[in-house]
Amino acid sequence: MSISVAAFYQFAAVADPAALRAELRPQAEALGLKGTLILASEGINATLAGEHAAIDAFLAVITPHFDQLELKRAQTPTMPFKRLKLHLKREIVTLGAAEADPSLQVGVYVPPSEWNALLDDPEVTLIDTRNSFEVAHGTFPGAIDPLTTKFGEFPEFVANQLDPQKHRKVAMFCTGGIRCEKATSLLLARGFSEVYHLKGGILGYLAQMPVEENRFQGACFVFDERETVVPG
Image: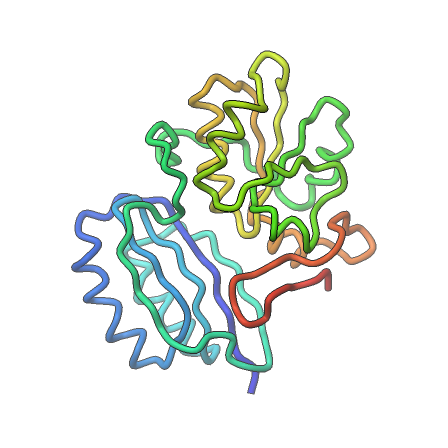
C-alpha cells in the first residue's frame, strides 16, 4: 500500500492555537496520521503521512480554518514518520525577526514554469535560503549559500552580505516555500525593492518541471525518513 505524504502551510491569523490543536489532535489520531504539525498565532505548517483517504479527510477538517493552503503531495512506499506530533510555537517557521510579516508583504511568487527564465537573468542575485547541510545535498547552479546552521541566522546574513543598493533584484528559494515567505518579507522590510521567490519551493519545482527541463542539481533534503527527493 502506498503512503500519501502531504506538506502544507499557510500564514493566517489563529486566535487560539491551543484550542485548535485540541480540536485537530483527536481527528488526526483517529485517521492514523503521523508526522509533525505546528500551530502558531501566525498560521499552520505541517508534513503528515497516511492513507490517501485519511489525508483527504484531514485536509477537509482544516479547510474551514485555512482555506488557502500551500499544499504539496507525494507518494512513498513506506511510512516516513514514527509518530504524530502537534506543536504550539511562536512562529510556524522560526526566523526571529519581527519585521518579517508575510501577512503584510511578501515577494513576487514565481511559478516553476517561469523559474528557469529568472535563473537566466544576469541581474538576479540568487539565494538559497536553506541551511548549509541542506544545500550540500543539492541546489540551483549559481545560488549563494548563506552558510547558516538554522533559519534564525538568516537575518544576520542579510545584514552583513546584502545591500539594497547593490542587490536590486533578488530571487530566493527553499524546500517547500515557507521559509521564502518569511525571507522575502524580511528583505522588503529592510528596503529591498525587487524580490522574488519560487512558488511551492524546490518540491513544487521538482513535481511540476519535466525532467529534461530541470535545473536543480543533486537531491532535495526533506525532514523525514525519506531524507531526500530527486527530479522525477
